[in-house]
Length: 246
Image 1: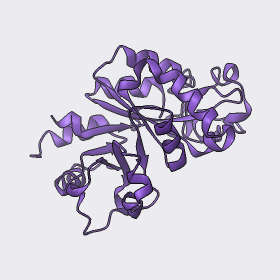
Image 2: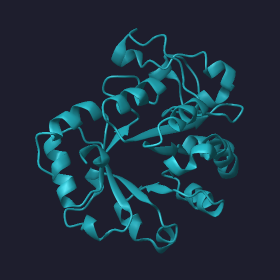
Image 3: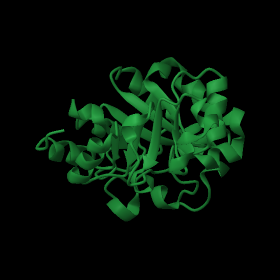
Image 4: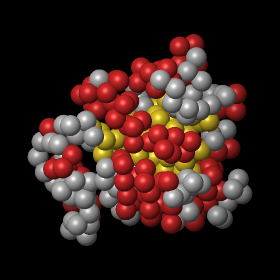
């Protein structure tokens, strides 16, 4: 099934503010069966959907996200004013708990939840893990914890999180015995880092390549052995790929 081969990168980002419940709902409405979202932590260690460490790009405010408690963050917009002007000015920052509550009613949806490096550095590995896992435990079977921080994923494995993946810093890292021992379910990688001669078919974990919006490029990488393609334009790519044979 075509939809099973795509991941909505930060939700339906091409049309809605990224990493918001609005964008994730729209992605699923467009046909997505898997979403990816980023998580940062508030000053009181509460997880929210957010990519950047600072508030300027998405919320139009100065300062770092982790200097404000959750109650303040939930009053701030998440509307990406540079991209959308005031169109989504009423949309506010989404707590991870709200995404988890929604996912509970979407049992067929897989969520790749990325712990951002700034959150891990701010709170420490255990505190960051505890904050995120505490929200996701009721829907753990639907959620794959991922991160560029390999030590965080090793810790999640050691603490018993059932589904884990890695976002590769370098392509060659997948050959590391240390990382192989984590038995990641998925390996995320920028497609531009994949060597021309790499055989994706030989890899045991699912290979998820980002960031792809072009149908021909998606077909190319799926043909080379990628299991899934991550895209900001989930609706557009689903429509475009409907005319291709995979």
